[in-house]
Length: 83
Image (tube, rainbow, N blue to C red; front, top):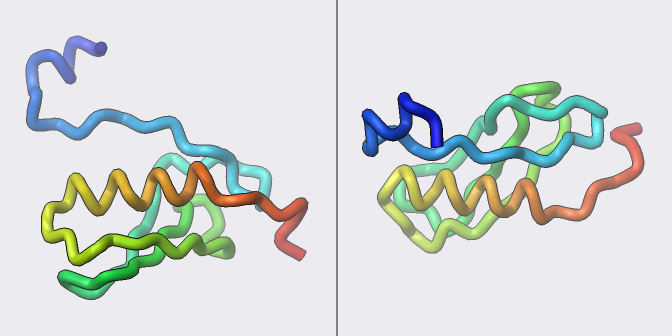
């Protein structure tokens, strides 16, 4: 664990994201979801061309939504290209 994370337990842990079909590995996810929605969408900050839908289950806590979006991104089957 990094020194910064140890000194600030409120900071969310950094999650390694799987590469996008565009060929780049996103540094983060852009999450689109109405407040208290059952489903949301996540796209990488690399190209914005590939979107993964995820079930949020009406969660209201940001950390839960972020984890569900990251899990959906990392576990989604990848197409060979975005063409």
